[in-house]
View 1: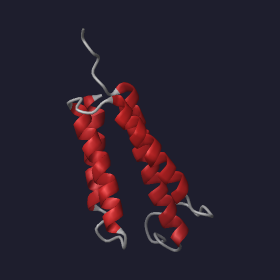
View 2 (view 1 turned 45 degrees about the vertical axis):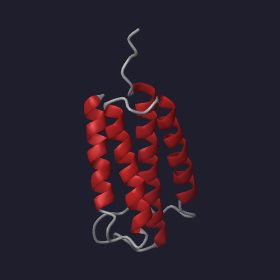
View 3 (view 1 turned 90 degrees about the vertical axis):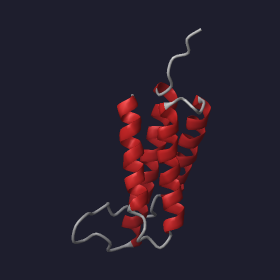
View 4 (view 1 turned 60 degrees about the vertical axis):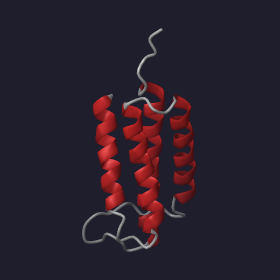
Length: 115
């Protein structure tokens, strides 16, 4: 599980870095940076499980609200941005990934309590 947390923490840092050219970059850099911070904080069990469940719920709600009115795919390559729906789908899927990772960390990411 430690590898999972480190891997996705680094992935979210990369996602945040790639948002510099986005018109609303501040929102997305903060969103992905906070997901990365949560991954790294979970390595040392510094936050309780409920924090990750709250984050997962927040990211899931944001992903649903961000979903495009008409799904046109998430094309990469030459046809990268032919419409706003493609950008909205990419953003929604990124938020969905954050939600999934936070839920996994909340459920299985904490060290067992030794009494």
